[in-house]
Image (cartoon, rainbow, N blue to C red; front, side):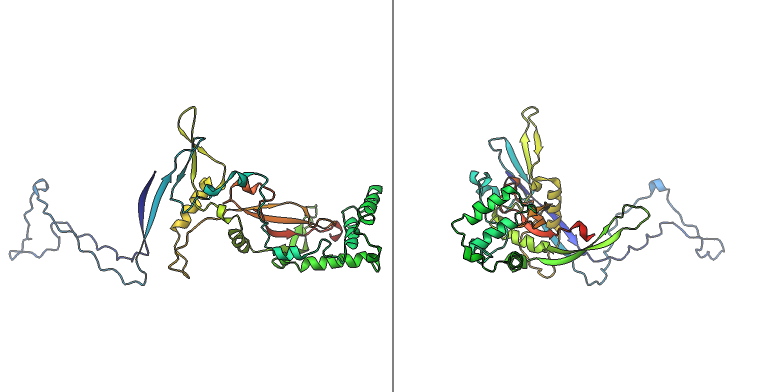
Length: 363
């Protein structure tokens, strides 16, 4: 069921001059000219309770003051939509009729944890497929050695040595001739160089960040330290990437309220669970519907939507092997249901920045 209502708002109305002063309703004046006899002229007045007030035409509207502003009337059409209840007795209440329902295309497979979506990183798939299994090293033998070397353990144990023999030396891909002229330092430099040339790395900017580190003494001022190597991307660029991702057709652009009939009181109760069903999202959506069109595009007819930004961060290992670690900052859109965002391989998380790791010796 649905109903529609229209709100009319007027903007930039011209300024009107101040109204004229009220007329003097007194019956006489102390300065009336005297009669020929020298006596003041007296006006005969009826008592107030018998005075007859005659009808009078409304005052004439004053002429508007010339102004450069123009009058603008904006019609805001509200087409409320209330859906029928589903099997669980839950229904939606849209303050405005949505342009589409992304949940209508959801299947049980989409909501299962076994779903595998395309990664959110804008990396060329053909470029990844062209890379060999031992990339970026020259052969599989060197790759096995470097993988064993950069596995994060600074102290090689007996178990690590046994693993080296079985995973590298006894591997069918091992070739002693591959190790002629081998140098671990050179191979690590090769790895760093290739990672910097990747397409994903080219999307990030590198910036130095100044931070104030407390001294621990209230009488000593904190010292400023510069942390180099912060990799970051623009938020607008990441949002544009998200809107063109394979998950974009599942984004909710029109918020709604979710209700369920209480089995006890038989009254409608509000159900909360998603960002796009919250009061804050509804309020912001209403604000942008009343916002004027951009001046650079006065004939814009595109839909106005709210993008809910969610940020998270956690330490992670940058490669399948090695001790290089990073602290990435991720960006997710709250317009997507939490049942898909929570899937590890959904592709809902977008890389926004990487906080560099700084050694204690740096300070």
